[in-house]
Image 1 (tube, helix red, strand yellow):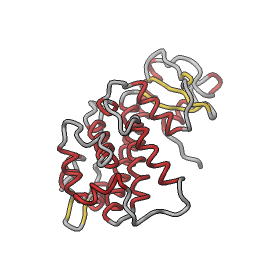
Image 2: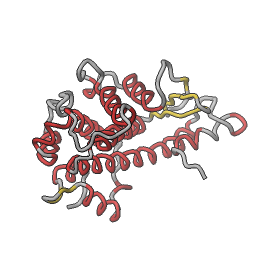
Image 3: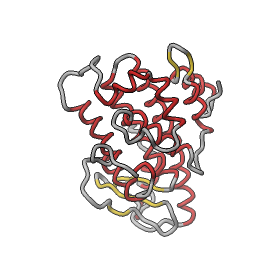
Length: 256
């Protein structure tokens, strides 16, 4: 059976004759839809955390190509999580993207503008809904920071037939020189976005800032990711040869 996002599965059954939602949401439906959307939010956060942890371990091993991809994906999942926590979802009517505000009287509306699939659409959606977010307050080398990160992922995935590893890309060189442990500690402690838009740090610092933004959302729910198995997994994931990455573990409220 094909799996899909919880929000997608529910909106595909609420419309006329049991099809895709094509009318305004009722109060009862808002409760049902938002409940499923918050399950997705929790799942997006879990996937983002796994991606970040795996990427940080990869940097220490010189696996820069997949670390780049995973750091981008962590941000993609976190953006979807933030949108979901804010009662916003990207759903599809067939292949056509629709933006849904989970509120009484709302219906999925066509997503305006051109995009290159779900990834660019999610970036555009977040940018449209939260244009004053600190995450968008500066550019990275004349690009929107989220688009800059997307382009690094596209370079890693598509620009060469052979991975460049273990050659270190310029955007990782400062992090490697300083060390992943010290770098992430500084990024977590930063409260002025000193690193997030600096191309020498942004590949890790920007995803961490997006993570911090999500974790500060009033509706964040870490409960489903706090069971014993998940906690043990995260403790092993967020560690290096010297032991646990204490600041990241504390940020995610993982029991030491």
